[in-house]
Length: 321
Image 1 (cartoon, rainbow, N blue to C red):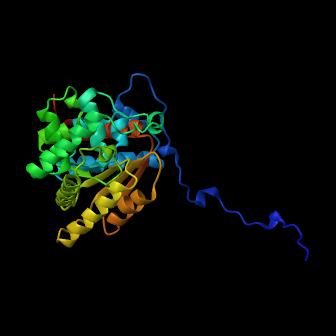
Image 2: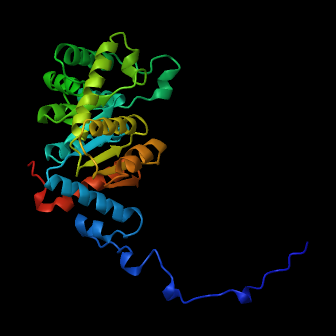
C-alpha cells in the first residue's frame, strides 16, 4: 500500500474575522504602575481563565453578605500552618464568615498557635525515635477540652476547644480561629477521622468524646448548610474530609426538606483533587448555582481573595476598628 504525500494547496481557508477567538484585546492585562491601589491591581488582571473567576467569586461572596446569606469556610489544617489564621479571624469579626468547618488536625495547629505562638512539627526528624506527635501539652489540653466540653457540657468539639482556649487565657489566644468562633458565637464544626491525628496516640484520648463531639458538629454543620440557599461554601485545602462531610450534610439537609439549590461552591487548593472537584464544585451545583476552582498556594491565593472581597464590599464591608 502506497501513501502519496497530501497536497496542502487544496486545503480550504476562510477569513480570520469569521473565526471565534477565546482571547480578545479588551481582556488583556494592564501593566502595573507604582503607587496604585489594590482595587486598581485587581482591575489590572487579565480577564482570562482564573482571573475573572476570582472576581466572580469575590462578587458572589459580597452579594451573599449583603443579602444576609451565609458564607461557610471549610478547610484542612494546612491553611493554619501557612499563616492564614489572622485573615480568617478578621473575616469572622467582620461577620463575613458565618461558620467554620475543620478536620481533626485543624484543632491541633489552632491550639499550638494559641498556646505557644508556633506549630507544625518536623515529622521526619522525630518519626524514627517514636517522638512524633507526642508533645505532652497538645494531647493533654485537647483531649481534656473534648472530655469537658463534649461529655460534661454537651457541646461539639469546635466549641469545646474554643471555650477552653478562652478560659485558660492562652498567651496567643488572639491567633485562635476556634477561640474567635466561641467568642463570636459562630459555629465551629470539627470532623474527625479516628487515627488521623496525633492526639489519638496520647494516653488521655477518649473515643467517646471524639465520636460524640464530631457527630454533634456534623449535625451543627448540617443546620448551617440547610440555610445555604443563596450562600457560599468555600473548601480551603481539604482533599478528602471536608468535601465528603459537606456532601453528606447537603444531602441530609435536602432530605429534611431544605431546598438548597442555588448556591456557590468554591474549591481553593494548590492542586486539584478528585473529591473537592466532584463533591464541592460539581455535584452540589448540578441543579442550580455555580461551582468554581481557584488553584494556587494558600498563602497567596486566600489573602488575594480576602482582599478582593473587602474591595468588592467597599463601604459595605463591616468595620471592626
